[in-house]
Length: 168
Image (cartoon, rainbow, N blue to C red; front, side, top):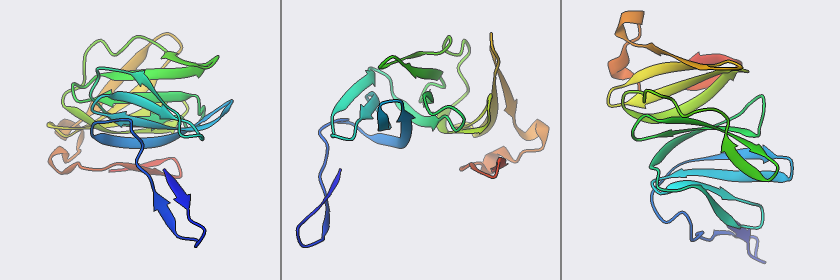
């Protein structure tokens, strides 16, 4: 967390939580104000504007977060064991929007990006794969893209979205 001294110098102060390695930090716009969401080796953490830190998910090694572009109260998490969770903020609480994916994705989830309203892209490592998560009203489908689909998987290390286009 940063603050400005009287001299104008910006300084940074370490928050006590999370105590273990942080993999990703994203901003989530909630009805009661924006918060920072943190994926870490000891779970999912939320930090509000006053610096209050709350653990949302414990005992999970989370490595990636995707914040909803179309609905800022939606958050998708990924872990070292390939588990994907979709969370929704409602009435001052985060809850699972649907069941956790039944079959974990292969590898550690590195990055999650929302490209369209019901479409998320997930990058994994070890093995490097790109997966599209299509969210429907009653189910969620996963489509993996690899060498068979013309993607040079061995070189995948980053993904980004610009103007609703995915770059790999």
